[in-house]
Length: 302
Image (cartoon, rainbow, N blue to C red; front, side):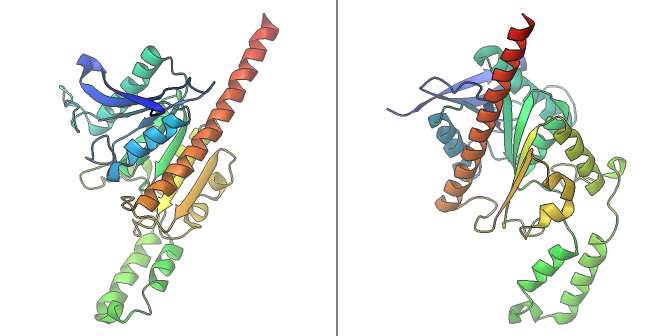
């Protein structure tokens, strides 16, 4: 018998949001959070290369329930009936998912996880919703560029003859890139739109958000692949960009150079599922300890 059971669920206003709840057959672990998996771009709830399916079933086998659902207008979920911004729509959908899990399944703590735009949405939700205790962020688009990023890019290409078929054009391109990364980023009120998807973050904006989220002891796990070299291409990049956050006890970050952005190989999927499983297990232990501590306090007061 499989160690999990799955069912289709409908929730939110007019039950127009559709998802799959993957729950363990055995009793859930005490203090275990519910994991919520968010869409990556327009990919529906199965996730890229069926990553969400594999992750949800793996977590359920270990006693963790998971909801993977479609945001409004994606997959089987209907569009928002009213005219609102994309950010407002995403925020309402995530809030509806957490409310559903709380009301129908007794959830008290939540782990949000997403890839690319899903990571972006999870990061911003963690700023707004105190019910979110932990977040997994896969290849989040961010302000990670620096001159070291360009150096790593050049090291991988400078000895290839194919890279220098048009040397003048190449030199001009690298000069433009270096000039771009040396400029100060836009302020929070000057953020432009990432074409057709999400608003890009300045370094100052992300720094402020990290300080606020970590200050509430929300745990963050950043995972980067080699699949988006324009965003991230070496192991120390996060630490260079955000040194204080990188040292925080509630933050973990990994670089997986063997994985592409779509986790298209079975080895890449197995690797990232294993890492997330271990990290979520550590969050379960942490939340269970907090539950025991709060119960002890209540006992003392009564």
